[in-house]
Length: 378
Length: 151
Image (cartoon, rainbow over all chains, first blue to last red; front, side, top):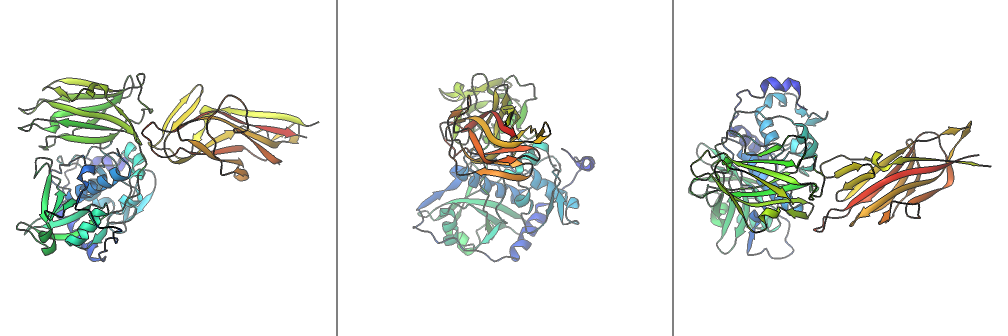
């Protein structure tokens, strides 16, 4: 369902800097008052770590921190409300960011299902249309690609919507602590002299007096993709390398379970790259093409590990059985010296009903460079 | 003496009200199978002999043959004459295998009989229930139909 008038533009070289989106976010923040965290019914725990609900550590490449940080807190909330929800994609977010000519002047945009989505507030399409998922639409941040509507994305996005626009919250350690204890991860702006960035705060440790945040620079950044702010830094509004900006929380419409697969691949610590690992998901003996779910092409992602949840091929009929098998094709491209790795998990789930790959029952399975392996569920 | 007429469709013709990846669906020669969570409506369009031998027919009874799995249950049956509601059977809690013959849990008497003007629709609300680790709740629809009467 690609709209023909968009086609001439899909590979056009369009770059819109992040500063445009961050300034937009800032202008929106100035129009609203911060809200306070709900009064806790019991004392907040000593430690909260919502990162246990975040499996996929994103690598943004050139731009998109404002979107990837939003998807990180949204993934966490989806996983808490509806485990095994697919990871969300920034395809449409980048599309709107880069193709402003399609919606700015007319104050909204038509989706391919015939609806007009009026721009109102900050996250307007996320409320009325929704967002798509990885695997269905792999986000491709490095090539200068504008994104687009897709058939499968249009059909799934309604399941992943914000209940209302993002809400500004007070920047203070006591408020952050209450929001996190209340199972709300936090989107946080940070600034330098000539740069702006957005990250997602996902936990705290009240003994060490630190907050844990996830960046969108892959899992070789910081400690497995995570960094730390102290309570004092948040309360003072600055660190020795950045100024703390506005912060936001979201409320989602809980998604319905969909049949999904969760895949975990690790590559060597010394030089391994998850983008070496090509993954396809399909239904055994299906005449339909295998669906490529990883990696985004032409990516500079230097992350080691991939822990990724994607929707099953739409032709798959639940449940998997010996006569109805789900197939994961894995091929290591051998593009980097330390290619090869280990498949640690391959699981299918539909609303809590979980079926695992039997080949992994005795532990992870290694693969070599330039090797093609095939795994089945069950 | 009143004449009885009956009209049935196969279960594979049933329609879901909402399409989506949250429903796993399969149509076979022996029925339609749906697996999901929460509440969903399903609709049967029954071929309707509105006039027979110059007489208008009256709807007497409706049937839906089904078999539920795990927590799934039928919670409502609504019967329509085109866009007009004829009868609503709400607050039901029907489960089990009712797919092979007429019984009290898969047939609903329309009292008084309704003089049909247009096409008959039978709508079925299914509450599949919550997520479980043991499997995904489901329902099979085998067939649906209705008895009509002419004076």
